Image (cartoon, rainbow, N blue to C red):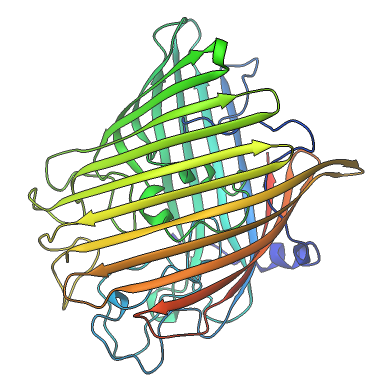
Length: 437
């Protein structure tokens, strides 16, 4: 649906967005690392129903035309030979642009676009509304997250518009008071790895997701079971998070989550270990996913993913690292593209990231915390019959937490084409101002 432009709001915050920012931490004891539930409703309130949310306003400038496409590249399809996700501008991973230019063909292996190209622009990245209801007298919680995403679709595609996304909508049942056991049914976050825990702009340390987030941070519809066993004498715990869903843990632009196109579910899960000492937290996990790929209708087209992750928090330092391997078999007609290439090509990817952040807690007027962070990403991927490409990214940024409801962050992304893809100017400066309510 069409909405008015948000230029007035952008101008009002322009002077603030020159600041940058990043992650959670303290200067003495570490804050708790997010658990494996994936959503982040606020603490319990006196009333059964609570309504919360956030507004994420950004400013971004990408080099070149805002894409990873080289002007002289004539390969077909064009998106099989570059990383179109690289010039990201916000927490959702939207690229500055995905426009290949006139006369060039792509096959749907692309992110959503902010539609700004290489022009500096203010952006209303997300307007998020969360509803949480706790049923009186019953071990049931219902949670939903609705997000409004104003975007520019291009003069030939309707101009300004807004997508309304029901990102999460589920009920969670906790049947036993004595056990950390929860069953959720509906639409919920991935259970694979750890990056999905930072999906939202009001939680994420920096602004943009990693180069492998497209494989691990999607939402899907199904059922999941979470169980944690505390081992108090060792200040430790073991956790298991498993799910059966329509589309696994890929982001929705790669595999639609709202219907099962093959009639067979995708299984995924993570087994984790936690050390929760007074001055040190460490969490390790291994993840797996298997089932039919949900961007085509053939049940025989299987996909598999394997991953490992690590989180450490000590004395204001936070280290997050993750590795993932993805294998997809060739399938039938694609649901994410139409035209010249109607089949889902076989695909393989290997990649990971490591992020280090240092946060200093302060009490200086409105300033509560300052965090400096850096992340290194690397991704190696190839389609059957096409040249493999290797890319990496170096990200640095700063985050300021003001009062308890405002976050300012800014970062610079250095995207590099190492092997197989043409070198292009696609570095990005981006920033984010997040109001929570």
